[in-house]
Length: 209
Image (cartoon, rainbow, N blue to C red):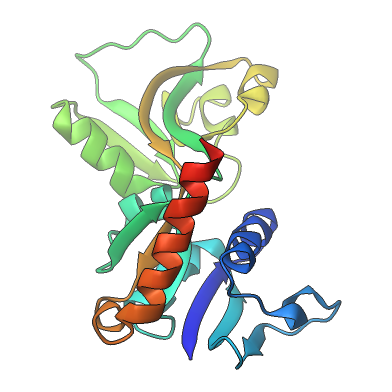
């Protein structure tokens, strides 16, 4: 059986539809229940839903052979996995945002509020900028409004929340999208089904262009 970790939520539903279109369907996953694991022995797949930020952990540690995780998660946690394919869905960007009237003073330490401390640190290190990271887990947008931080580093999709709070994007760090990832040992020992999925996804992507 090929164990596949899917991210819970709308992205996961889109991802499953891609697996289904590739011939790796599992009808029970569409039933209305609270099950977390679904199998189709006929095609040799076992799916399970996990929190999006946990997919890479399941894959890295071998509980899942393959999975789908956002590029933001891969950059933040740097799991020891293979990144196989950009699914070109769940698209957004990692960006620096601040109040509309913000002006950076390079002479001062920049206070950065973020959930993505590693990404922020790597980005500003590459610029040689002195920063103070304030790690938050909740609504990041409120930090500059209340004077807790100068800027935020966060995922931006439409930018509506930023606009409504008088914030603007100042810099884009990196574009983000969902990626197909594989456990390194699984990629070696279950290469046939993984390659079949990979080729199906590549073919579907070509057809959509």
